[in-house]
Image 1 (spheres, protein in one colour):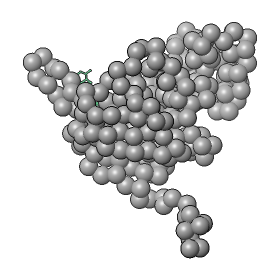
Image 2 (tube, rainbow, N blue to C red):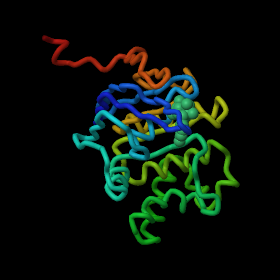
Image 3 (cartoon, rainbow, N blue to C red):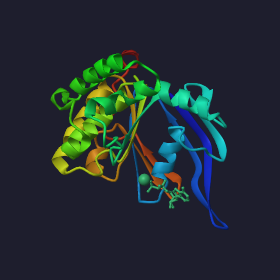
Image 4 (cartoon, rainbow, N blue to C red):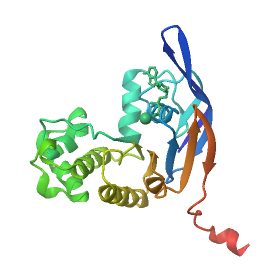
Length: 237
Ligand code: ADP
Ligand code: MG
């Protein structure tokens, strides 16, 4: 799915240069569910933004589905984002004056899909996340968990290969977090690759693999908790 090779990134803060990603080396296969953990300021969001082609890196190589993602024009970057990636954020990032169905339909609006058609498709995704009855409500009328479901429906409507989620349960209570994680688990089982930043070890336990960052460096990369399904050919060899 994607490869990062010796990725380095710096932020210029005044006259000081902050080294936020240090020789990051990682390979993620299609269908993986990966948690990215680490202390606040360790570079988790920066890494996710590089993966989401929302931010540039200074050296190294990022290959997405075999294509080098480097110095892309804004138009090309947007094209890759639309084709490959759905985003989910801690603060939901819904448009406050739009209804749930309009928020879900937004990516199709940008793709110039006609209103009636995009709202019809958006309704299917709202149903998928269990919110068909809330289609005409605005975010202010919804709970945090409902807002995150709307955001997940919006992330899915472009039919992405990969979901990038930055602390998707960070603003939710324990029970609502568990519901959102169950939904992400279902989406993963449908074959979508998920990369999720989280502080919470309980949330991270839903993933199959945990990458830990410290000061911009990967310090551990565990495929531990849930072993990958046994290869039946190898098992009988
Ligand atoms: P995390 O998501 O792990 O909390 P971030 O990736 O947001 O960490 O930030 C990593 C480091 O980069 C932090 O020290 C942060 O202050 C710094 N940083 C993040 N964004 C910027 C920016 N736009 N300009 C300057 N420094 C930044
Ligand atoms: Mg962050």
